[in-house]
Amino acid sequence: AQRVTQPEKLLSVFKGAPVELKCNYSYSGSPELFWYVQYSRQRLQLLLRHISRESIKGFTADLNKGETSFHLKKPFAQEEDSAMYYCALREETSGSRLTFGEGTQLTVNP
Amino acid sequence: NAGVMQNPRHLVRRRGQEARLRCSPMKGHSHVYWYRQLPEEGLKFMVYLQKENIIDESGMPKERFSAEFPKEGPSILRIQQVVRGDSAAYFCASSHSSGGAFHEQFFGPGTRLTVL
Image (cartoon, rainbow over all chains, first blue to last red; front, top):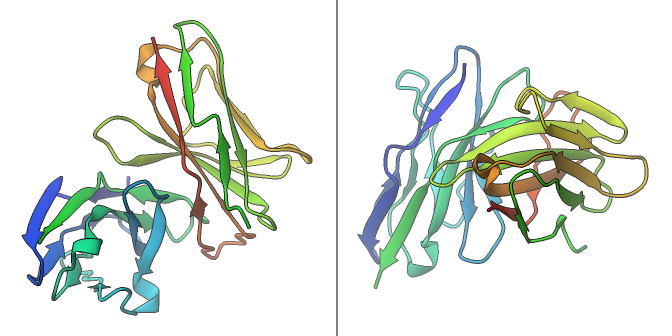
């Protein structure tokens, strides 16, 4: 069965420092990977998907099939990046059903 | 567009009672998904519905849980004879037609169920 693992429940960095949120997955087919973000008192929302290969709010994520990883990176963290981040996987045959990781709470300190 | 609406936002039930959670999708969306988030865990898929159809219920517990999305009105997630282990946040999401391709899911604010 497919599985998404985010090894860090909590991650704390200082403003301006690089940040990397780790995500590993297990799936035998061709997955589609996403990062979702939930800011304080807001709804869960899509941040980026690997297919689009774009940078959103300075964040990028590259799908590494060899390492089965989809780590989220930003070179210079900002205080407004503090949020809960979820990595999610969509199976090629499941329509839109998503499998989520457990989430990483990112805190960017001033 | 008010986005996906869920009500109630908080629901308290005693063991053995029924819980009904409602979800109104975004305007123009015909697909609804329900996810459950237990404490300290990620969101777990429960069920995927179109109007009057259950498309995928592979994540639904076999007993006590049911879902519907009628032609008119919101989608309902119903939990009969609730137990303490049902305490969780229940999130609804909606999207445009799927058709095998991914369409972004827009999430509601969630309903937090507490079973006493």
